[in-house]
Length: 289
Image (cartoon, rainbow, N blue to C red; front, side, top):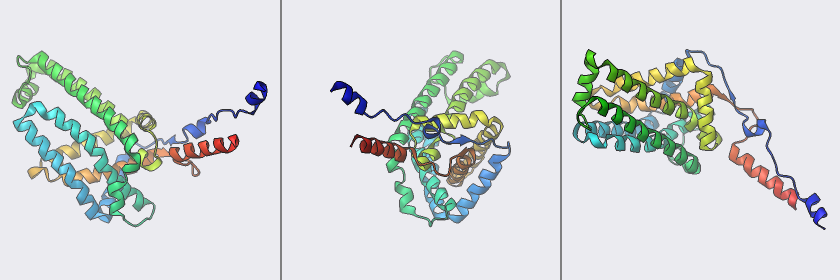
């Protein structure tokens, strides 16, 4: 009796490598980010009202950050953390607009507002990871700064004065190394992960690993992309009341969708991971019956 039950018990379904990770990382030319910005600008031109709507949150976040840095700098990292939690959800609506345009579908503003709901678990986990990294980044920056100042919380003027003083080159190098390391990690984990979650409904870990693989395989292109992001945000943020961020935010979000599509290739018959998991469970249930 026991032997019969063991023989009739279905074997666990172990997905093959192609089923578990069907995506392929493309090798990109170093100049690829220029084409992403061009395509992103076309998306803005095709969906101007949607882009302006989603640009407002980026602008508001910039205003809040500027006010906090000026009047209550001790709360700056908390506000940055909140922005990191809200930013991906705002960008997701723009990714959806770019995806629909790429697929030749009509614009659906209401769909873009709620496209994040079915990916809430993955998005929440990824946002949580970015939040933790940002908090660690802030703590590490404060530790480096405290080593070179007599006060625990130096003012922005003190930091800028130290950075511009040739005698404080050790502080500048230490601060840049720590900040650069965390910035590179955050960039690597998020550069294509959020668009991938929207497109394929993957879990946060798979999306983050794929994002790191994209950066590792296309170092030159991704370095240029990171520099372009920093320059565009820095230049447009200097416009009166940082109004430029209402434009550059959507531009970078649209361009990030094309960065993902250009970097990650999926087989034609590949289903989103959630659908494949459901189908696998259904097949297993059928075998049990």
